[in-house]
Length: 449
Figure (cartoon, rainbow, N blue to C red):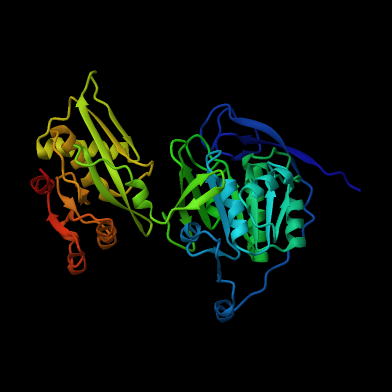
């Protein structure tokens, strides 16, 4: 019997590409000193490829493969696009301790179907203790501490679950590769094999992934490209709430969010997040305003706070929480050039209360007016909301889904709204809220101040 041969290759720790020979500089990402040696087995894989059968479009449309499976959590179903879809591959990322494993266990319990939880980081006993604390239903839930890929696939073939949770992909390894678990080559190969299993056996697989310091999911970027859905679990130690956000979804709306609160008994849904974010809002204080944000298809009202003070050093500070700092600089420049407020010697601090991060351009008008309110030390009123994208010419540009935002504001008792004149139509006029359509920022200032 011929011996299996191995060859030497070199892997870049920065970008994950491999090369046949060593280089001082990585030819792909141009980093220096990042190539490390590893052995590549030339032994042929013993797997035999079995081609899938061809189906007509009529047969696919009339089958029940497109039926959604409810997770038991309405907030999670919203982010998934109506529930779990059979044969989908889902990637869930988040910082340590944010609640990824807790959410995965609660989903396994809520689907009321056969589920397999692969915990390569913890033993079955540790997972069982957490499940007991979360009051997870033990029926139809199977646990395994397997971390070898072939063993995991064998468990899937034996148990035939409808949902598989891999916690986490960084600890799963393919023994056919000579690299360590968590390396780009291991994550790439294990992700591809799990994708094949998901599609061939029509089973939903939820992969938990760690995140880097930059907040991106660790491992090669192609892992995000091969999955159907990419979810991020966001949270802050200062707050009890957690935000489940869809960054990619082939079967639903992207940028959809689910809001939860977390305690010792697990994650609990928040039916009305606007009330939660506005529970302690400041009233009749200069520098505060209310902005109806739109997260996916859901409007959420957020309090915007701004504080402007004289700069004590040569370079004024521009600090913001929950918004793009470069866009904040643009708004300050518009405020100085088009309105005439001197901001060159002012420190500006902006905070979106509650830890929610907003990248919606419709927040421009609210943030700009809050800065002006703090600068002039004038309040804007208690029951008013501000919406509109601000251009460099000082114009207030149209925004999307104004009707949904205003309906949410009116439901929570707000009486007035400053909106872009280009977005006003008959449907918007029929909402029980007084509108102030504006074309330029200076028109909004006449209404507010």
